[in-house]
Length: 509
Image (cartoon, rainbow, N blue to C red; front, side, top):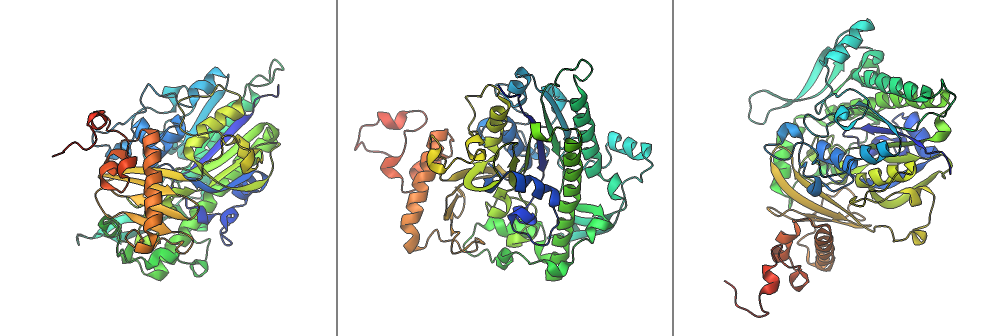
């Protein structure tokens, strides 16, 4: 039996897919992520189960959909919702530990409020919160020990508060530190230290070191984009092509989208300002890519590259002006739901795959690569047949032909469900306007076709398929669809079984 593979898992936060050369960007420099893509599998349709940090990361860690693990929102805004992973769920670290893996984590955790990696027996420091913790004692000590300047920003860029009270959200600023002193480099150095320790383990007695699973998770390129001048000015704004969806009018769309646009004061920036902000965001991507390069180079120097699977993804995307929005929120557009998905496994072919894949597939894939026991409760499935180059008709059971995602709120509770297939996307908004997009004719998702008569058959088909999958998953969101869509006789019994007990044709009040 072959020795088990190490796993180096790299993750960013709020990362647009279209920032990377392997996904078609001809301007941004990201040679190290391209190294992973060109030597492994680049998934063209990789999705987050929900476009918000903690729920997405919890799904990755547990392998189950958000409605099942119950971490619906970031703990900073939990408002009484579940704030830690339920103890009845098997998290990824448990079967890896039983399989003899050493486990390490550097950087952003954000899976729950108080329980960091150490709670799960994972080596590494807990850096809590959603944003770069510039005042964390460990980071500040590291700066002092290395004679680096402390965190400071000049020329901050703010939006405009909608209520007229003055400045709104901080979007970007010039970090008054060299690249070597950034939080991104600090996190990378922590990961490098763990990597070197794992490489040397067992060397004294001549034995092969036990395999490891090491995660390096950067807080960026999540806004605010606070980066050194070198990266802040790396890209000429004139080379930035503004998103086509900046033509958004919000006509026929859920009103909450317009409200979010106002909340983020997206219209307070003109086109030249948006080009600069996007160029700065690109610079942030390259800053992180340079950190990725340090890890990849060290992996090769240590002679581990042929025994290590490398994965790169993000928890979700970011609007960055698309749809006249910023950050993320209650709008299920491709900008924030489609994410990078790169996997390089020694001995597996270099390829692009068009199958739908998701963060919930990560846990079963890692366990499969590790030769660890599978977790029956996982909602995802191992990507290893795809990584091996299997043709669609060679995969049993057949690979999914659609992706379903969910959202439960951020600043306030807000329930949504989405189904996306090869051509169409349905977004079900129980308290508002439903959405239907023809992604072939309208790739920027500007025109809501939900009420267009010629798309009625498409709409009915998508609603029935979404309903069927929600029922199959046990997602209680199906109960609203039971009586509020055309599913009619196709509907499942009520959760309490009462509806099934009523005789056909019985009067109801």
